[in-house]
Amino acid sequence: MVTLVLAVLLLPAAFVRRPGRARELACRWALRMRFPAEDLTGLTDGALAAFTAARTEALWRHGQLIGLTSGYRDPLVQQRIFDEEVRRSGSPASARMLVLPPAESNHVKGIALDVRPHEGARWLEEHGARHDLYRMYDNEWWHFEYRPDSGGTPPRRRPHPGWRSERG
Ligand SMILES: [Zn+2]
Image (cartoon, rainbow, N blue to C red; front, side, top):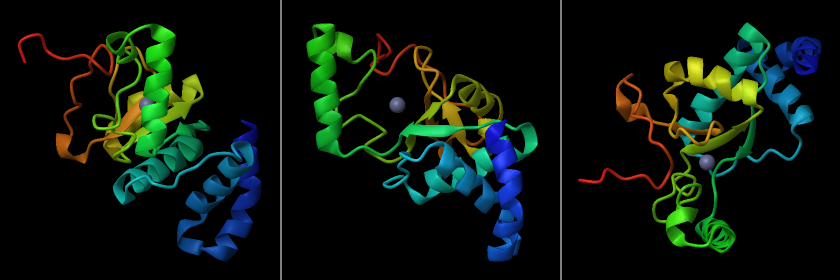
């Protein structure tokens, strides 16, 4: 709610700066104050535009705040996260329940978005399809992907990132 108030207060200034896109700009400013460490770089143009549109709508229509905890990841960073999870969980197979190696990760491709807080993720789950953003895994409420190729049909949600059909 604080962020929405902030966005409303910022709206006149945003209007002066960019009359046609004042709501989007005010939203971006408010989110930047709320989540100063957020890093949107490395996302594909499509993913960034979709995420920006989705959270502008979330804030102005429903007062819902959506922050990004992790978007694009460098392959080396992804490898380190995977290795750490292998150590923590005991095996590559169990690590894959939560993290994929760089060659398979959509964070490395710039189309995956880990969001917060929980209510923001719920909003995105409900309204994200309008922006081609979909929750992908049963065990990760925070992980969404930009999938414009799905033609409005949500991609089938899988139990966890490493899940594969037994029979291919
Ligand atoms: Zn993720």
